[in-house]
Length: 276
Image (tube, rainbow, N blue to C red; front, side, top):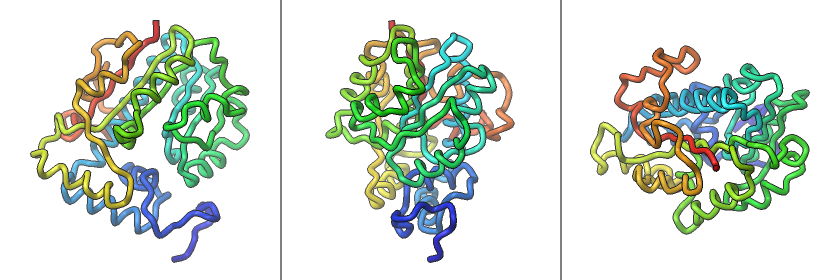
């Protein structure tokens, strides 16, 4: 297999990557055939996966614009993945030139791409770290350089918590990050769930099996379980809801092509909370 110029040396391009599979769902070009094969296997069980990812991206963009409108211009995006058009720093800086963004990912492909995309952007940075180790994130030099944790920060955990198993204690990880944030900070979460998927759980679980086979277990949680991540935060209206229902802007997002009426767009929950 020929290694393209954008692939960092040292990574195994014969093993599927969650970041590159997500890139494929969004129509990106930074993925390999091994990623596309895994994505297509998952779509055999859940053909609406690209629509789900589009709804996820559209939610993220609305949440970022909401944060800036609330005066929050610092963003910590953990599990950020491979940068695609309309990423957090582009949306935030379009709304406020003062916006600062730190991306965090443990995938070396995502980190390398982020460095390339952010080259020359003094208000954005990338950290190679894992959500399972919050202190590594909080202690990163890029966080100290770009973010003032004494002021409100928008913590984005978008489509990442469902890759943490219960044994990873994801609630404790979120609580540790919460405790490091100033009052007025925001928590932005999206999470996969069997609730809302227009298929039986038995059929949809085939997709979960594909992710388990590539050693990236996908943990489907209920709306109630997802709501627990907001302990210590006051939920912003309308609460934890199916993603297109969170403060919809009334029109299809032209950047994502999201069609809210598509039933697959309602697969998965999103919510925003504010720390008192």
